[in-house]
Image (cartoon, rainbow, N blue to C red):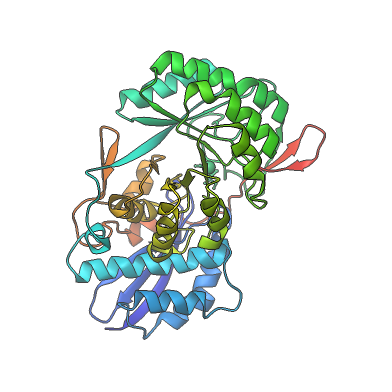
Length: 401
Ligand code: CS2
Ligand code: MG
């Protein structure tokens, strides 16, 4: 069997997405998500100029060898662009292999480890009352877990909070500049969780994304102050380049920690996992080298009581969601899966077999990962550059977004 074509489809149904489609000489094709929010064209170029030409003629069944070809075989290893490109190839090849085996991908990985994949929804509001109302709406829709983000008095833009309509951070041609105050945030956010717990009680899992903005001692303070509210996790408390810093957080708080949505290889995760500095690893099939590599990350995590908690924002396409749900159905040390509902037009361009019921997703039983792309419809939604914001402190210092 041979790969006869590999093409990149760049489209924008609701938001920008990059999809890789690999065709074989036996008519079977597979697709993979290659979306890197705000840097889509970088991955398109990497795939079109360096990856796709090398794929032609290869046997699509040799998933591992092709993975190693594009990882070990490349001098300039790792990084979000490279690993997103490898991930797209990997997921497309697993899609092909499962179609050839005439089974849903999770069966090929080792079969079902759970009846359904617990997901968490997003709730946000400009004020605490509005946020609490959204949490109650998510609970009413059946979610067992809700991520809670709220505006901060005195700040115009806060991560995770929509100014109006849907929350989409990559919303301008060039980076918008937002202003941040850690002091205002730290003084406000514990009140949020008190109000949420008062409204929904103890049985709902509550999560929160700090989004890389604190120092370790500030994260230690926050973790300690929100302990009474028993969060499922506090996500990205600090930037994860200096992983020593997590030891300081761990000394002060039992609030569980989740990190890793921006990680792209097992080497980014290793120190945090081996030193048990985190409780959930957020790496994904789209940004961490695909199914083949995420499996290795999950296996390492399982040795240290760390569970998976993959990223699943709307800038990860339904192709990623589909593959992730098969992975989540199989992986033994599953924790939770993020689910931020895509727009209707996104779901139309990416028809899929996965479905939601009462707080859980199932991946569907069709051969492959169960997601396709309607290329004709996709062509009606051309790419437009959209950049993520940057953050400045109130004195103008450039800060983490
Ligand atoms: C966030 C993401 O969902 C999350 O946990 O961190 O929304 C993140 O801000 C975006 O994916 C960035 O593109
Ligand atoms: Mg996050």
